[in-house]
Image: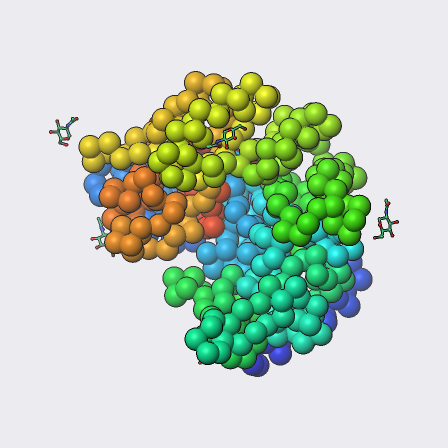
Length: 415
Ligand SMILES: *[C@@H]1O[C@H](CO)[C@@H](O)[C@H](O)[C@H]1NC(C)=O
Ligand SMILES: *[C@@H]1O[C@H](CO)[C@@H](O)[C@H](O)[C@H]1NC(C)=O
Ligand SMILES: *[C@@H]1O[C@H](CO)[C@@H](O)[C@H](O)[C@H]1NC(C)=O
Ligand SMILES: *[C@@H]1O[C@H](CO)[C@@H](O)[C@H](O)[C@H]1NC(C)=O
Ligand SMILES: *[C@@H]1O[C@H](CO)[C@@H](O)[C@H](O)[C@H]1NC(C)=O
């Protein structure tokens, strides 16, 4: 348990100060990109060879932001609470040229940044706020009689004003917890609670204003509703998908700087038809090929997506690479998408912890190449096959520096 009562209290009083501020101040564009030690540590850990030599030749380069470096959940959730303003600012400092807001709606139909409509119980302190916990779909239940502690708290349970009083924390829960305070624990030991001191939660409009002020690009994701639609009887999926685009139009952001994502094919088709400029840049997220049988179907379906006008597909990392006689190579999915002229974006690097543990225990993002990744330096082998083999147009990362470094060395998407 790394979260103490005193830091919770400090966090809650900090919320009061934020709420009292008349209007948020916007950051200025970041000129001094800082990658920190991690990329250099990873390069040093690579096996000797041409790729390592190439990357070593770039270690004294002045770094720039890159559109190829996409900040997942802000760009720094390896160490900062996801979707907090602080995660976004850390991602931008590490050269992410595109910042992500996963979008969900509140009870009063305002759009906010959260990875899931119903993850407030693991990504904020909501269960430790009795008046808000009481509004949760399922308020906190302590572990008892061999049953794990649980809670389900959704953005649609509370208003925007209530949402803004929450503190963002690292995504975790403690299933043995008997108190709300203990339920907030459980951050994996390769992440950290060092910056989970009451992260600033963001609404979609604030995220847009921040990214504009930074002069970067946007990648919002329309998260699947976890409540029955139409919500409250008359808020339809199309109204939700339209409101999401309208937030950019109102802010005067051109469609060319917005990569709108969704896993729902219907959302992509809706944007292609109703908002063609935004539709042109829309990204179809694809997790339809997780099993070997389904994978073949996912590759086949690329033809249909291209025919329907989809321009960009975004599968997880492991769909794009395969292990071939001890070598990492581009996969059938990657080859087919390229043949069809589809752009590829992929997710998400730096979510898996140390690669030695991935090799030993397996991990979703490395499913197809588990045998080939043994030490952390192998991450750059994967990035290199994604870029030079699979022709990937952008990589989401939980620690933007890792991807930004490669992008600078190979001069990809630099601002
Ligand atoms: C989890 O909760 C239990 C019971 O409340 C507590 O004893 C333990 O310290 C907590 N662990 C973490 C990692 O927070
Ligand atoms: C990379 O790191 C691992 C784990 O610390 C270590 O066992 C391995 O020897 C390192 N490899 C190189 C080439 O430095
Ligand atoms: C939607 O339904 C709510 C009641 O749930 C009502 O107050 C509101 O006026 C309706 N809005 C529209 C656009 O029909
Ligand atoms: C491929 O598309 C068909 C038709 O839309 C759909 O039924 C099927 O689930 C898709 N398969 C995969 C693997 O996505
Ligand atoms: C597999 O790799 C080994 C050594 O790396 C090589 O000797 C062998 O010919 C390769 N086999 C095939 C089928 O490519």
